[in-house]
Length: 387
Image (cartoon, rainbow, N blue to C red):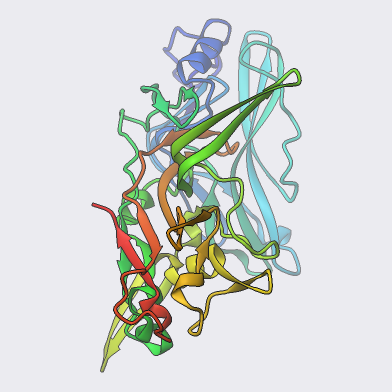
């Protein structure tokens, strides 16, 4: 059963808080967010979509669900001839001092009604889910688009300003990514040592529980030694040298191929790292091969032209992006040091939570190699995770 608590006509509504005094106050208390306070898990069969027990709030209107309830049944006379994407909407109508609601199925994924119904009369549409409907009914699992409403929390400080983000419901903080390097034991990568390994998010499961209602992403930060920071306002420019972690706008020496700076949770790859008989060591949390960082962030020059590092590149000629000058035969800042933060975004792509920095991954030229003329790419670099 579903009860709209901000409705004088709802069944057995003993709640004294109605539209005129309740919706706008609820909207502010919920930090002007729409979604589930708790529960509200969507399930489906080939003909029906149901919502589980919970409390849903949209523009300050609360929907109390005391048991799993079917909210839409699709007749077979409505099945399309081929698989088609559909959307499930909750439509709320505010009229004078009352409110009503209905569930609407449409192939249109664009919100049609946007009235601020917590204070004005009108109609508001909230997108609950998307699903595929075909000749045999609903195909697969309905994708819930219901966000989780965050609780107010403490502020998070980034590199330049202090932004007020919300903690996750219950005051929980977002864990920082825990990175690992896993050495490959398969194919040509095995011969490269750590250079042929994979950078992984070892605590992937810590973020899995946020997949319903949130977008999860891992954002790259680079450590810069005496990097130049610029502010510009009204024609005036201020330049400041900074040593520390920055969020780069781009990273890589080749214009046609830059390093990926933001990874969504779904970007995490599944890789078979090793195999022995029937046993396969598989990682489902691979962020990026280590060699891809080297390919995009290190180079050497041939007749003034930047070229990718290979087995025959002399160690003394390898340079990283943003390396400086030449001192005592070696380049300054001739390494790449990066770390990651996890971020949660709501359904409107607004950041609502941010973790601290992970430990750093450092890739540097191996000037201490015993064999300076080595033709093994894996011996030309050191790959470390700082403790």
